Length: 257
Ligand SMILES: [Zn+2]
Image 1: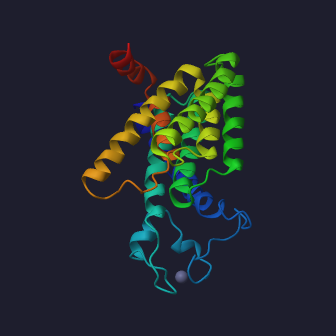
Image 2: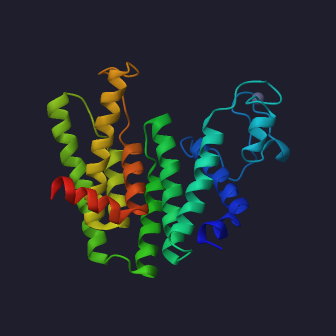
């Protein structure tokens, strides 16, 4: 049995986590609501019974509508349930259920939450940055995959790289291109992947964001005044780096080496 089929045995567990990630996305930006409270419809406030809250399945049975007020349920729910479940199972299998695989799965889940919150609210909550630093510290102490000095350099290097890029962006585009949230996110991820990893991830993020922006303008989905939060690009590029570090390094040296 391959590692990936073994990881399928954990599918119900991964789906439960992915559904909790949805709860985090909906409730963390509104700091007053409790994460452990029963789910409610965001439109009519009716509490949602367990049989309407089954990951993925309920969304199709209810035909994307609240049972009580018939208002539409956001696409965020099935997208995060499917993407989160897939990411967790793939990461555990990819690193053969090692200690590292659990920390990587935790970090990629956190990045999914941060990306959706940033896309919807244009913020990166401090509590999530702090959670990421704890995951990074525990990973280094337990797996020693990178040295402590590389982690600290990654934190400082990732943060200051974006700070400098943000200042240049402001001079060139005459508008705020990078927020404090992006700087905190890059610093936190630098602590997780180390200096080399975060610099490659940030170059990749800038490349993907520039490509997406250009495509958006070409296809007339965006104009020059649109706000494209950079956080999800940092999260996406670093996710690629965490999953495929050797492949990313190979292409990086091909283009820049
Ligand atoms: Zn409702």
